[in-house]
Image 1: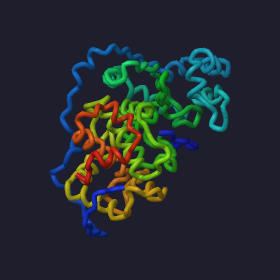
Image 2 (image 1 turned 60 degrees about the vertical axis):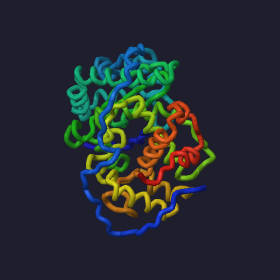
Image 3 (image 1 turned 180 degrees about the horizontal axis):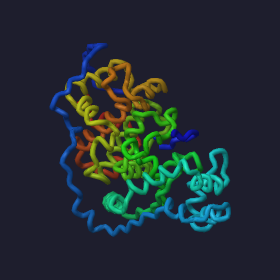
Image 4 (image 1 turned 135 degrees about the vertical axis):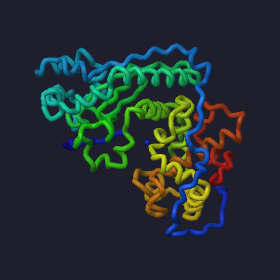
Length: 361
């Protein structure tokens, strides 16, 4: 079955080139995968010295233990887990709490396979793995930001949001993950998925248990990612996304590129290959897109899409975000005296771009 009505919450000098635009270019699948190949990684040794306690509170289990009546659901929202009730479980068309939605969720036999899939997929071992992954990420975070408070972490099931609640919620005090979204197509019961109009197949493939902590860190990067809101150029947005990816790489040194960027291994090979990467970059330069403020241009290169039709069906969507990450990575290599925190605190996207001396490498 497909649950409906889900709103998914899951963000001048340039280097000129002589460019030939081939409308039918075929991307080569070479062995040279560039720096976006899954790289060897190393956790920071001082991370283990950071005291971090992680507890994951299973709201979906607590819900199923409740008696199926309005009073018990209201108690769950307003007393047992008041903070979650106020911030996470909200009516889609207003601010009232949703005991009726939770009652429908736990009583509807059509939702039971979803609860069962979550129970099977997120067993004790996987939850312990999730705790370890959260712990390592927050240990790294506290190296750079010692005053960071580790939020409470909750999991739940929302029927893809159709019965009240969000897919994912992060603030400084609380993280709530709707685990049914992170079953992805691999673990979800056959026929169960979010509405395709809101989460198409190419996006649904990116949702997996392995992407939960990465998504959390993407959200948490916002608090440290200084941005000049008056700069409406595409390069400003590319740098913003690049810094977000850069942040995650610092907190999760061993996160796979396929998880971080949401690309298949074939996509990564295609765009990281020198010939293909240079072609895409030159195409963007030729179109004078870097400093464009047009929303249509930014949507083309930064927005969600299965591929960028203007370039080639083998060029995945959001490739501008990936280039933003390469710019920040190159800036770090060229400016070794600038620490991570200073890079995140710099709101001047054009300065970061220019000092990176990035030209499509």
